[in-house]
Length: 65
Image (tube, rainbow, N blue to C red):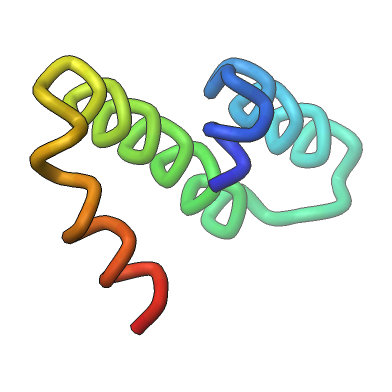
């Protein structure tokens, strides 16, 4: 969801890299954030590339469940 809010997966990739460089987090934990940002950006771009109206009820139901 952060990718949608920030509208850029680049921010969510640069941030963990900076945290790794500072020695605050191990690479394995930051890798989860990086992959999640890329997968989330790809998923939402595919949803919006298609007819969003047909997916809206499913996405709303999934969010409410």
